[in-house]
Image (cartoon, rainbow, N blue to C red; front, side):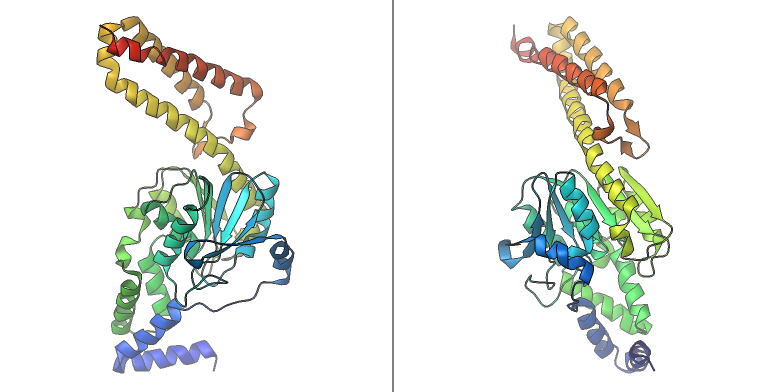
Length: 358
């Protein structure tokens, strides 16, 4: 009899007679990660890393210099599982910081959950420059999405093999280990008490995700069903879904398609910011439009014309998932956008005098 068969048999029997006991044992197992050593192929990258200690003792590894990209592994994972992606990001000029999640690696703690993972991201971000991107695998991806609802700011975000609903993940685990219905319900309540948040709230359908993103998932993932990625993508207007035919749960971390898609996303985030700044300026002028039109109708007409021209130029760079990578924009288009922005800035500089003038 295998160890898992024994556990399921124990839970099936004890779970009916003493559901609290069975739920408590599985609750402890669910929140207590094992420490798994790095694979041989991870060791060279580990040797190249700088070990840093953040607030509250959180440990992290750092590589490279440049715009900050923050990585978070999954349950019982390690920073160096991102090896291929880390090397590509460093070559592209990014500074990479990869956390040891709570109760993992050299970070403190004995238990962990999605809320603690998310808070670790918030603590790390507080000590880093503005984030270019956050990338999370499995529970790390779910935690990254949650962290954005708790105040994390990033230009872009990537989830790899992440669950969309924590409640679904809890139920799958409880079913996998053979807990009967009553013990399953008590197990879920125990995890909720540890996390300090109802599992039903940890659902991407409840989140506001207003930044560009990439959702990566393999169709043959045996741990997190591919449908979870579809749910994340459906709830995230600015996301692109990258469907891999094979890769299971962890191999997508080193997939060349994934590396290329991440680099493309980081490039397109520049245009997201550009467009967002234009839209923000346009909204502000919209609030002042009645005053400007009354005092200087010619100025308002010129502002409207210039906004329309810039919007048309940006729209040409849109894709179904957002925007093309800025790195792929030719020099002539970049110069044209720059000239349009300079002209608009010059025109907008006249607004204060027009609004405040008699």
